[in-house]
Image (cartoon, rainbow, N blue to C red; front, side, top):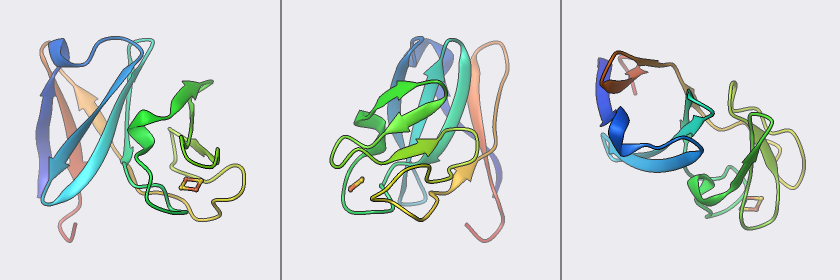
Length: 105
Ligand code: FES
C-alpha cells in the first residue's frame, strides 16, 4: 500500500485527534504539540475509540476503562489492556499528513 495521505494539516489542530478510515481500518491520528502520531483507533481491550481519549506525555488514555497506550509505539502501558494497538509510521510535508501501511495491511 505504501504511503497514503490521510489529512491536510489544517484539518488537525494542535492537541486534537481525528479518526480516518483507511481500507476499512479506523486509525486515530493525533497532533500532540505539533508532533503527529497514528494508532489503531480501536482499544485492544474492548470497543472504545482511542481518538476520544485524553492525551498526555505522548500517551492516550482509553475513554472507557482508562488503559494507557504509548502513542509512539502502540504499547499498552497500563491495565486493563494488555495487548498493543497497531502503530503506523507517520510523516508530513508542508500541507499534508501521511501514514505508511505495509503491503499486507
Ligand atoms: S475499552 Fe479501552 S481499556 Fe477497556
